[in-house]
Image 1: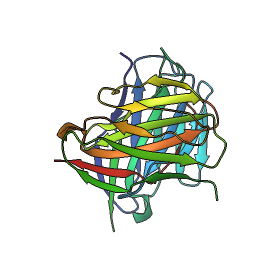
Image 2 (image 1 turned 90 degrees about the vertical axis):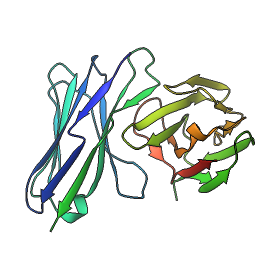
Image 3 (image 1 turned 45 degrees about the horizontal axis):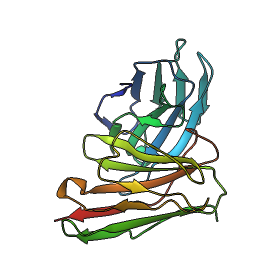
Image 4 (image 1 turned 60 degrees about the vertical axis):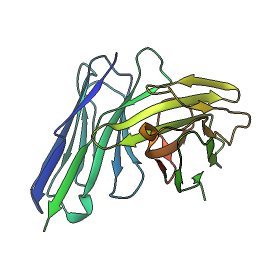
Length: 112
Length: 112
């Protein structure tokens, strides 16, 4: 079945360092979404990418969608302690466009 | 305030005792969904609903039932809970299909 793989599972950085998480799908995606979940909280939508090769920025966060629409990345420049949390990517299931497959997430820990 | 609400937020129950977790959204969203979150497994979709009286299975539907009699409500029913259903459950909604999901605060269920 379709899978959305996400790496790394964990990342521990010093404040000010950069961070990147990668997402790969076994099938072409119509769109990919990114979510952030703070410890003890619920996932919160960050962004959606739709076009091949799309790049979007939100302040220190840069999101990319691959040319083949099968992979994506989230890059955070100069991490801050407020970036702590788990970052998930998600894409529609190729068999049913209404089902949503999430990656297992990357947990980011930032130490001051 | 636009929101997704879930009740109860915490529940401890015993094996075999039927329970219902309610979910309600006030955004007039067509699409609603249930996820479970387990350590190391990320978010897995249980069931989703594209509209009133239209539901479909996600990745892990076994042991769960849902209904969508009204647009705003999407209860999750465990007819005979078992310990392997101990998990953190999230309800989510979106305007249409597998796009930007708005998550509820979560329900932490323990089955002993």
